[in-house]
Amino acid sequence: MSLKKLLCIAFDGAEGAAEPCAALGDWDVRIVTGWRDAARALRTRSYLVGLALDLPGPDGPHEAERFFREHWNVQWVGVLAPNALAAAACRALVAGHLADFHTRPVDPQRLLHTLGHAHGMALLRAQPDGTPAADLMALTGTSAAICRLRAQIAKVAQSQAPVLIWGESGSGKELTAQAIHSQSARAAGPFVPINCGAIPPALIQSELFGHARGAFTGAARDKTGLIESAAGGSVFLDEIADLPKDLQSNLLRFLQEKTIYRVGSTRAVSVDVRVIAASHVNLQQAVADGLFREDLYYRLNVLPIDVPPLRERRDDLEMLAHHFFRTFAAEKAPHLKGFGSDALRAIRDHDWPGNVRELINRTRRAMVLSEGRLIGPHDLGLAPRRALSRGAGLDASRIDAERAAIGASLERAGRNITHAARDLGVSRMTLYRLLAKHGIEP
Image 1 (cartoon, helix red, strand yellow):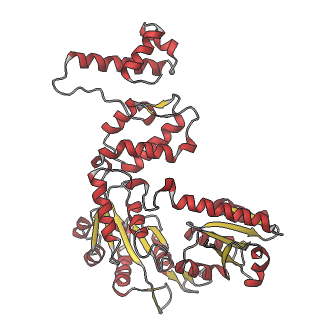
Image 2 (cartoon, rainbow, N blue to C red; image 1 turned 120 degrees about the vertical axis):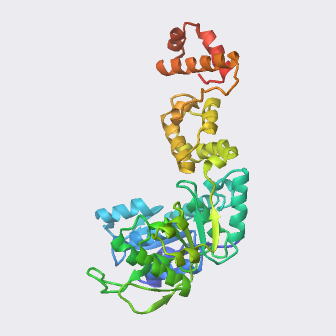
């Protein structure tokens, strides 16, 4: 049986790791010294679990937080220095980035149990519901549109050329980029997502390309930029249209020469990384308006991919709704069992301007707020369709009016059958019969 791989960060070297790692006989342990060596190790080999000794480390909790934020895909277990939890910054570090932690002196058997649990959780996270990691939420479905997208991803993943993803907000552009990365030869390397519109303009050059020590006030040491941290893997530049024009020229140089210059440095740094960019803005129009460099557009648009909006995936709507219900099952009310027929009909009728993100948000809200056994249209914030198609007869009008009256009465009565029956002027048994007739859950 192959050994489980463990990356151990010991700031004092192998001597500092000797005691905690002595009892880890069924682990293949690699010991590194400091954050930089750990980042280099993660670029060359894939680890599901990491052990960081004597946190927060000599550089303090902020440097540790930066490292854990960049390498979030590893399940980290920390060993804390004595009295470290007394500091608020260290408590925040533990709460936000560690799967578990121990304090010195370390109990080897407890540590072994913790690492085993972290490894199991990492395996579950890597393969949810027994499907490959690339089978992500927004790519679930059998519609023609999503099948075309999956076929495109499989082809594009085999190349090393830049990819430009276009799609409406909330349609799943980042998940498409993750699928491209996970199916490529770079899958073992890092995937670093960057939202170009979320970084302040004054900081974006330093964040992307890094800076040299003394480049500006407060630059006390060299800093690796986000692009450089993706070496050996892929960098995802989301909302690329928001990148300032002076930074666009720097990105163009990187795409042409595969080198970067840190802020305040004249030394070129070679970086092997694949660029995947995305935008909900029509970049051709942005070029015509003078807002985006034409040469950069053509450099990025080597392999274009369009992510279909949810309204073009109506065959997937019911499958996606049930998928998200299972995904967020831990958040639902205990009595909730699923979707009512009226809710599924409302989901099919809605145009979903917010795409997959809107479906996720409406489903999660309904799972928390629904008071019945089944989610109804009102729980989703969607009105059931009552408009009749042209030529509908009197019987159809009567059925729709009856269903609407029952639904409105149940709402007024707070789903209380006795009060709703009294409001409608019928007996409880008659109301139960009507509910069954219209497929409405009591």
